[in-house]
Length: 118
Image (tube, rainbow, N blue to C red; front, top):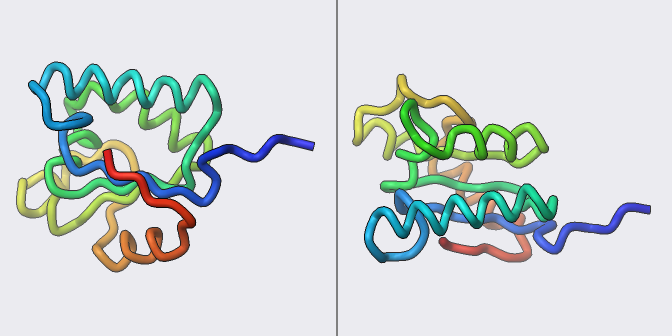
């Protein structure tokens, strides 16, 4: 019998280019550590939703592509806001996840027992 992840039925929202509201370098360092710990402990959420500046993490040139790809390959849905991608002109640069809309993000949140905003 496998132990259920403490993040089962959890959705994580990423709305920045890192974690928290500190200097950009610290934000990215914190998020990199967070994502690494999720992978190391196999404590994976049901989905991670990216909107506003968070969409910049899933596009070409992002330092997080490798970790996010590993997370996606383990079955976590990465949902990216299409409105935000269009706003920033990044639709053609998406390298991980699925492009969705606000209805997809709302659906993921409504099915979750817990929603965490980083």
